[in-house]
Image (cartoon, rainbow, N blue to C red; front, top):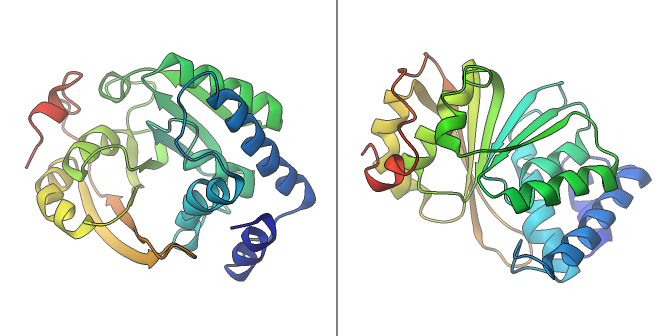
Length: 238
């Protein structure tokens, strides 16, 4: 996907990018490639693939959810900033908090935010399990997002405690989402969630399957969740 195709295909979905926003995506790409030589951020480094598999793929959540309001978003385990930073560039009104367990990635994101001149962004070095128990952040966010971090039963325990009641958890998945959801249903209910919608589509050009799972937070998460670091992964709620 070249830059022109990126711009055109987003415009077809009602997302119009200004010259400044296009320049920010270009700077994001350059900074990602530059830092990737020093630390492992992504296996995808050619421009067309970054625009398709990182930028366009991240923004695809906005095809099914309205990001035009000044929402508070928490991105769990964002790595090099996906999906929340590409969404933030397209929708500058949103406020983004990224939590990641690797300090090197947090340093990259802090540098990136300066390079792109982003405001309304916060980067926190923490495990999702301890972050979700922190009263400053627990049940404080309109939206909690994660892209391909862990299977659904684990992801739900890490993410839903951070969403406020009435908010949403948006999980971005590749294939096998239906199977994962079946195993994750118990965790979703237990954490106070209810599946609202599953949107499936094919990523352009390579035609690979993508799924956007939107879960409503209908009631408060029991205090014991998320459990201690490592526990959700070792013994998921299934």
